[in-house]
Amino acid sequence: MTTALTVRTENLSVRFAGVPALDRLDLRLAPGKIHGLLGRNGSGKSTLAAVLAGFRRPDEGRVLIEGGDLGTPQEPYENAVVTSRVCLIRESGDRPEAVSVKQAIALAAALRPYWDADLAGDLLDRFEVPLNKKIQKLSRGKKSALGVVLGLASRAPLTIFDESYLGMDVPSRNLFYDALLADYTEVPRTVVLSTHLVSEVSAMLEEVVILDNGRLVTQSPVDALRGRGASIVGPAAAVDKFTAGFTVLAEERLGGTKSTTVLGDLDPALLAQATAAGLEIGPVGLQDLFVHLTGARS
Ligand SMILES: Nc1ncnc2c1ncn2[C@@H]1O[C@H](COP(=O)(O)OP(=O)(O)OP(=O)(O)O)[C@@H](O)[C@H]1O
Image (cartoon, rainbow, N blue to C red; front, side, top):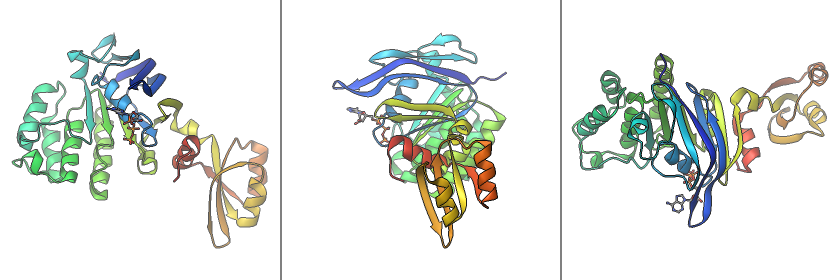
């Protein structure tokens, strides 16, 4: 039986001193998928993560979490049953700094109904997080790694990583991505990865929510989003001729070869024309679409 939870937001708004950080969001996060929560700095990702985890009360609208062993939809704020099943890991840590890693692990084991002690032990070894050190004595990367271990071993039916792995170096981040995929395959749950580093996580994502200035830009399965454009590769002159008239998202040139990413549907006639001109057509990169949809610079 899957414990994965479904999340819905209805007209969800959060304001700071009257300024909206989240503006009337209507979302549905399907259960048992890895969702990317993408947006530029200040777009509202952390605020949304905090409201989903019941750390904040919405100013308007509501969050509803349902499914798994929760049954009917419930709001997470001040709801211990829901929050024990939702794990939010933030870069800030949210943990008492004066306790040892071992104590932090024992506390999580006591609070988390789906805690897996073997997984926690294995991951602490792999990330080389010292058990007896106090959290305040850990380096930034090891603190992030501890957060990742707590997030994965909690096996919470809704697990949210809010840029919590960005303090880790590349090999550690790769270890995190591998561990997440392996454990998620074994025990499916609803995972949210909040980040502005789209290219690094894009291969893991199944669904994407893009925010900009607190508003929902798009929510879509990754494949559908990728289908909104194409990359055309081939001799530069042929690529330029073929892509004239399209909205260009990105261009890259290597010697006489060019790769141009365009927005828009390529119908079968256009595809045949491209093949006849010796061009290769591929899907659009999520990073290029993200940059286009949010006006970000890559
Ligand atoms: N505690 C707070 N007090 C006042 N304003 C806040 C507070 N927290 C967030 N904001 C504002 O709300 C907006 C959204 O911030 P949020 O941290 O949710 O964005 P983000 O997408 O997570 O950004 P980043 O990628 O930089 O972490 C920003 O304009 C931010 O300045």
